[in-house]
Length: 344
Image (cartoon, rainbow, N blue to C red):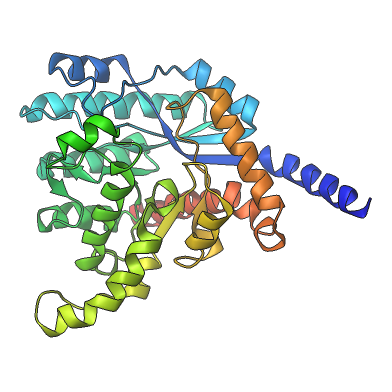
């Protein structure tokens, strides 16, 4: 009986928490974006069709799931097919509509602006416009933009601009470049390559100490940290030999990792949650749904499973409000405050 009473109390507590939830991993998919992909025969570039999106359905999902606020980002693929002007115009449209959604529904939406990479100069212009004029809450960066991977030296001028603005950076995996056609034909990107691609990009950033060199950035790694809980211990064990032989530079592990945040899109188990806590602290873990890439019913079932997983463990239950909303609120409020100070 006592166990039943305790379970009931935990469920009641989680019902209160869920009404405050913030979703840091959701996508806005516009007709204009679809048209660019269609013009280049790229509708299935990421090996699965883009889902439908409209604001009314998104808000209805949020209401039914108990989500107060969602952070909108453009999905994969990057709409760049050799024409920098076309890409910049498409991304500008996505950013301006995202800003309209935030303005129309100020309590329901934030957005992280997309940038027209691999054109670094155009990306800098768009970042400045989106953050300073449109009121973007951060930027979304692809793990790679047509082979230009995060951590690439060519991106340093962009990172400098984002660092000046204390930007939140949400990462999202895109099809790797080059990519294994035969494997992808049988195993769609979302099943394996996306976690591998995310890990690849973050490892490249760590190897160049990007987050130490640009310490005002806060970078959100998607899908429960992907393979990083496995990759980083191996990197740490091998790095001294690589440095000694001149193949790599030393990595400031603590400095880099302290600036990484992790979203929980991807239906994490207890084991995954605990593995994340070997990389980071409880205040750096955030809820994400991946709306609208799975049916509403599946996303709500995943969310319910996450709540049950958290509630079933005494330590994790104490972090529920952090994971589900407080960390996200703090992250974006801190960025907004830093941006205000910079402008003054």
